[in-house]
Each structure stands twice: as C-alpha cells, then as structure tokens.
Length: 478
Image 1 (cartoon, one colour):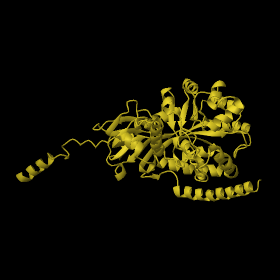
Image 2 (spheres, one colour; image 1 turned 180 degrees about the horizontal axis):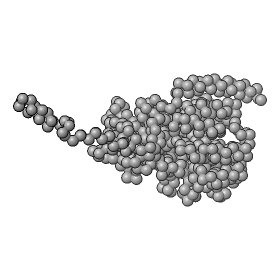
Image 3 (cartoon, one colour; image 1 turned 180 degrees about the vertical axis):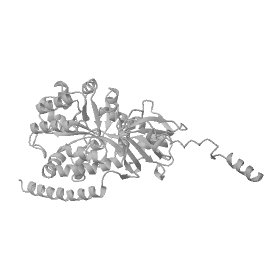
Image 4 (cartoon, one colour; image 1 turned 120 degrees about the horizontal axis):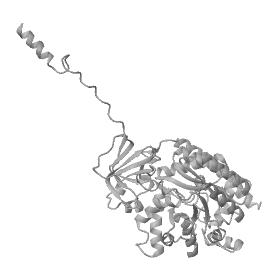
C-alpha cells in the first residue's frame, strides 16, 4: 500500500499533471517583415558611393527596396528568401531608346545609308504592314528579349503605343513609352493633328499606371513640321510627361533641317523655346558646345546609341563632353531593325571600346562610368532617377541576378570589368520588376513565349509578302 501511495505522489509531481499549472500554448512566430530577401550574392548598388557588397543582401517589401545589408548582418524574417551565392545582384538595366515593335523587321535591310534605309525600306514596310496586331505582338517579342537580357526599364516611341503599353505591362517591364507624331499619314493616324489628339487620350489612359510612363514623341524635325513639334512640346509640358525626339542624328539630318529652318535640330528647339521639362534627345551626334549648354540648362537627357550609330555610319556622340556639361547620358539600343538586338550588355561593351578608339586613349570611358550610363544615369535621363537605376532603400525593386558560375565569367576580379566587357544577356538568370519576379531561371513568368514566337513567325510572312509587293511596284515605277 505504501508503495502505491509513493507512486501516486511521484506521478502527481510530474510536469503536466493536474496539480501543476497548465503550460502556455506555443506562440505563433512573428509575421514576416519582408516579402523577399535576396542574400549571399555580390550586390552592385550603383549608389552615390558605388558600393559593392560581397555577400550582401537586399530586403524587399512590396514594390520597394527597404534595406541593403552587408555580409554577416542579421536578416529579417521574409515570406521568401533567395540564395544568390555565385551571382552578381545589380540594378535592372535602363534602355533609353528604341522602337520595340520593329523587332519584327529585324534583318529586312542592312548595310545602307540611314535615309535610304528609312525611305526605301522601313517607311514603306511600316505603311503596308503595321497595325495594332503587329505592334502588340512585336512589342511582346521585344519585351521578352529585353527581360531575358536584364533590361527592366526601357524608353521607346512607335505607332499604336497603347498596344506597346499593354504588352509591356503584360510582360511586367517598366516603360517610358512615346506615341509617335509624324508629318505624313502614319499607320495609326492619318494626320499630325489626329496624332496629337490621339496622344492626349493615350496620356490620360496610362498616366496612373505603376509601370507605364506615357510620353509625347514627335519623330524628328526633318519628318515633322515645326508647328506640330511646338504643339507636341506644349502637350508634354501640360501633362508633365517626357518629351522625346530624334535630333542631331547625322550630318544628313542637319543638312535637311538647316535647309528648311536655317538651324540644326537642337539649335532650333533651343531658339523656339521647345526644350521643355523632361526633354530627351535621341542621338545628339552633331551637337555644338552651345547646344550642350542649352541642354544642360534645360536639364534635358541624351540617349546614346553607339551600335546603331556605328552601323548607320552616322557618327559618334561626344559623350565625354556631354557628361562634362552636366547632362545625364543613358545608353540605348535604338530599334532592333537597325541594331539588330536589344541586349544592353552588348551596348555596354561597344560603348566603352568605341570611345577608347575615338579618343585614341585606353583610359577613355572606364567600365564603371559606362555601367552607370546603363543604370543610374540612364534613369536620370528618363526623369526616373529617384525611382530606379540603383539598389538603395526607397527605390523600386527592379533587380537582376547574373549567374557567374560559368567558364566565360571565371575568375571574377573586378565586377565592372566583368559587367561591361564579359557578361552578355544570356548570363541573366533572374529578373525582378516592381518587386515581382518576371524572369525565373531564364523563363518568363507572366507570358507564353511559345505563343509569342508563333505569332512572330506568322507576322514575318506578312512582312515578306508586303516587301515583295513593294519591290515589284518599285521595279515597275509605280
């Protein structure tokens, strides 16, 4: 009996028995304070100090970067973590000039002067082929190419720009997208006045979109009357949107504009007071010191397109003088019909090397400065410098991860050397825009690429048929 009582007493003293207080239920862990933490990679911030953080981390909440941490820092709880060991983590690239649907004209005409290329091939092909369907699928194809090669923000101008905006948003890229206004009947508008009216409606439809910045884009002063350009500039000023125009692209353009107006393009824009806020000049090859001073005073940006300009033998912009004047210079591919690709990494490599050749100096255009043109400086040229172009707290989470664990990128000594002279778009592995992953392991996450390619092949047959008809008519003198 005594043994039974001792046993009952010992059981009563065990934890969890009725005589002990009830244990508190386990507490739920604290909710995540971040949506995504990218950690363990080499973070190339492109902030003012150009910090490069080996083994650093990005903390992302919603659409924005909330923290950039050095190696060894305590990481916050996150809904998702991504191990970036062996990767460069860079700001999304910024392509400051293009005509994205023209990817469907890639390779139809090469190795000829700019005006011949435009007047004998591009303009006729556009007149016969371009419609809303063509522009939509062409823009999707181009956006897919850009996303897979690390471009997260791009600026362009074309026809049916509503369709470009729709395609860009579907892929998940950020776009500064200009509705083209031109001085002859275009595929979307029969007259410049109709184009101006349509452009205003376009601005109203897209100006509140988180990814799309609509803009006003008179093509050039050699294709568009000065009075129309004046109305376009006023429209951009009134809505506070970018005003983009081709200007000083070649000596041939200078001659054509001077013959009509007694001045070259930027000189005329300056004289007429049309360098409105958020002006972006595409090319700017033949600018004078007076032009550069005027652009700097107006806080205008320049898009530098070395590969396109080299291919057309148009000349080379004096980027060193532009930057010395305080002008933000971004890199652009121009349209894929005249480049012939949308890989901004190739543009980086070309830009650095051609300026060394032109200056006869291997120290001209160092890699770090060229990479800035494709990131923070390109964003500044587009008027988006406070939003994108660097990896800093408060900036939008446009982030690219590059896998360096391949033979052609091993060993890695200097990140800027690798980014400018060695890396190509095919090394891009993951891409985030506005905090959302749009490329995962080189696959687009939001669109059906097989469908896009099939539609592109369908439209190729339409282009070929229309070109053949044009050549027959030209041969017959019609």
